[in-house]
Image 1 (cartoon, rainbow, N blue to C red):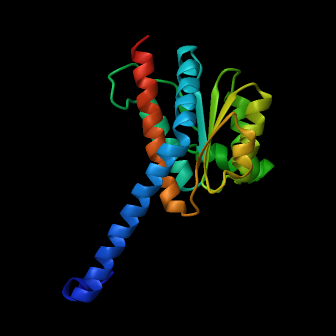
Image 2 (cartoon, rainbow, N blue to C red):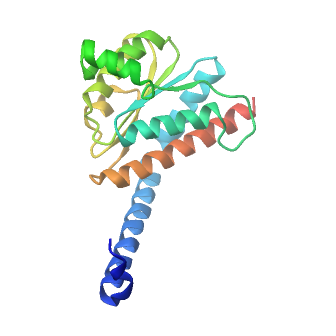
Image 3 (cartoon, one colour):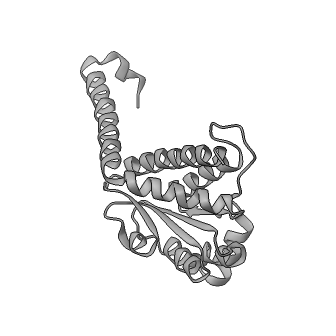
Length: 204
């Protein structure tokens, strides 16, 4: 965007209106999520809290922006969100380039998360798959592997939830086709999950 925009009042006003419209769209979608997904978010927080209280761990995964969300949320649990506490075991399966490239090379990209679930997942752990489309093949394959190994599963999804929403124990669906807005809601939901879990564990 050119700095000439600052000197063109008409174009500046158009850009300013775009900013307002984007922020309003995001705010409206969050209110929609609050109305449609509150119960699922609380259920997911209880599932995660029970897992961590029983010495289980969280395994998070997704592609692209959802990979970044997986890493962000794992960091909140291992570090802290708000409450000063011990670190909580959470692993983003998106961070080890050697594992990702070895598995993708030897078994195909659809196995990059499932293979790690196979290696790291234990009964009672929680697998959290993140997909804005709900149809990412490698995320779905990892969830199916997790279920076979008796892990609990949560999906953060967009659009109509896709295939992922149908195969997880708890699906939190942000009903929008705008990928950016869905991702913004996913990280907000993740922060709420961190807050609820910290509060629950600090009371025990």
